[in-house]
Amino acid sequence: MGRGKIVIRRIDDSTSRQVTFSKRRKGLIKKAKELAILCDAEVGLIIFSNTDKLYDFASSSMKSAIERFNKTKMEQQQLFNPASEVKYWQREATALRQELHSLQENHRQLTGEQLSGLSVKELHNIESQLEMSLRGIRLKKEQILTNEIKELTRKRNVIHHENLELSRKVQMIHQENVKLHKKACAASSTGGLGLREPEDADDESHAQVRLQLSQPEQAPL
Image (cartoon, helix red, strand yellow):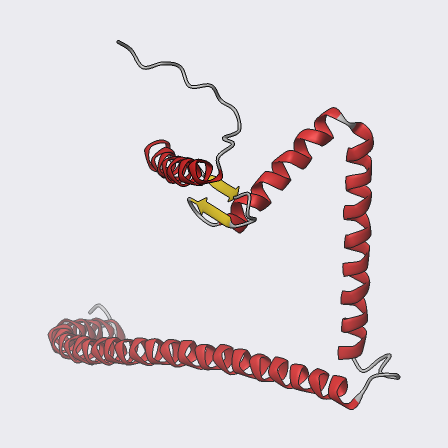
């Protein structure tokens, strides 16, 4: 014989109602955990008993779940209600204007303007903020200068090695030029001795010719 259908209605007996609440609450929280794990869903569960006792469960965090719920709910309302969308953006614009005004005022105070009306504590806070900013700026500047010095040192070492290599090559070229010059001088000296004899012979032949031509002719008998 099958189990009869249970009628869903308020349990009049307080003891039975409390027992049922405890069992169903535990079962509901168990199902919520299983749903979050099995389906990778973000689940947020809030339960208040009839005695105003709170029971809750959240797969991530209750705050995150509530914020996501409110955001989604507002977006859905804006899709179906243009007037609500206009009001929403008006509130956003007002909040942004207030934030911009606050940032501008803070900027002016940091530059030393509009300091009247500030207490000693507020001025001390601004001074501390400026000192922290200057400390950060100095550290950044020192870091940049240190990096530039390292880079210049590296380039100087590279140029120094290149100069040494060029000096070595120039020295080798100079030595080769000296050797070539010596060989050229030796070859020139040898060639000069070989050519003097023909020049002397030509001079003698020319001298003989000149001598012959200079003799007077004998008169016929």
